[in-house]
Image (cartoon, rainbow, N blue to C red; front, side, top):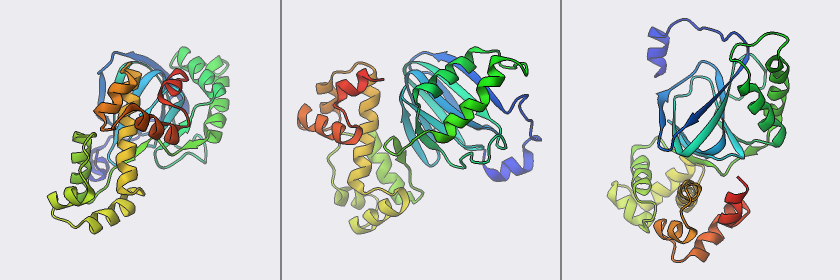
Length: 261
């Protein structure tokens, strides 16, 4: 909800019964949670499957070794890539002083994973002496100490010309169109578009396109698509070139990376 409508018409803030509450839900492949937001911050973690999270400022492809912190009030939509078991912690803004004010991809280490699974298995509203009440403070501590990951985000710009370039790339990830060709289609010089990429996304044109292809690759591989097919669909001359890009970005070749999820 846009801030002007939120301020004018939103209902009074309703606190949760507890500062930290957990949900677990199973989804079929292709299901979505359409655009919405929460007053609380939210940690989204797919213990099984891959989920793509869209926000007005960027998209994240989240795997079972990662979690996405969605800050309070941020509009978002979830797309399930294959069958997904989704675990969610919803946290009141004043539950911890360090709670992040922007979305953040984190590594979900084994202890945090087990705490989330245990908490989402408990009743939604729990007693002060319950397991969930004991788990919540430790889960918060693990979340605050979780390593930040930078490779999973595909940032979106605000400039209309650059946004159109990004849209063209997203519509055809395998396209080998040059920066000059794409810039001419939006009525800007290649130099201007290159400057805007760096200023608005923090990435160069080449880095942004590579991140787009990497996100698409993880989604396709999670559905069991062969590496050779993924490489061809994303515009790589051969599987070796695709594998080299994948290993450089994520530290492992595609098949080994997917086995670790």
